[in-house]
Length: 111
Length: 111
Image 1 (cartoon, rainbow over the protein chains, first blue to last red):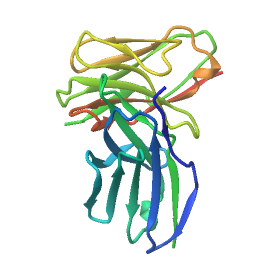
Image 2 (image 1 turned 180 degrees about the vertical axis):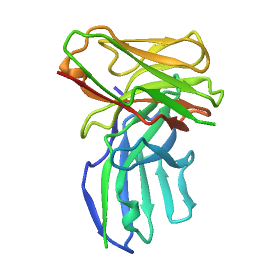
Image 3 (image 1 turned 120 degrees about the vertical axis):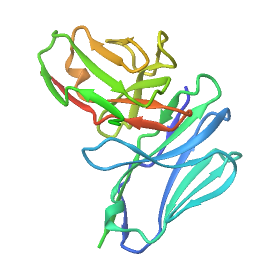
Image 4 (image 1 turned 45 degrees about the vertical axis):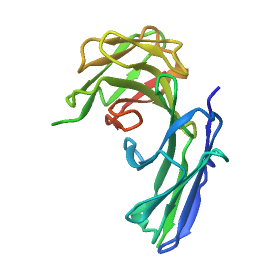
């Protein structure tokens, strides 16, 4: 069973702080890693992708991947109330390339 | 360019009734997915279609059937609805693997 695990939260941070969201996965055959954001009542949207070990930055977002530890994280700098949403970690595996999601972490950014 | 469209947006069924959820994409993507989302459960894959004419079971296929009518359309059928199928259903298409574009969702209640 391929699993993607996230703490469901809520993770509460003050406006302007760094929010750190974490995800672990069970299959060492995992190839690609993604973060999706989902606002309440809306559909998920892709915000970050990472394919190799290390950090990848895009604006206020940084994705971090450590394949040896089977760990991927998302950092949001200068958090804003508009960042309040559920963040879903997703991975693809070698076979079939089907996208598997974690349960999501709800982030609340308080003004 | 509408992206991914789903119909209907809302539906209430009685136990034992059948219905088909429709999904269409205008991005010329090969891969399409059906997911269900329950509170705290993230997105669980029901069925997947890598290309026109092919379908594969996902994590929770029981009680569902799918049809990939052509490259644009991928439908999900509930033959005999059960209360356990109350959920939000999302269709998605993707290229390349992992970069999914989601439809707006169908909120289904089975009484």
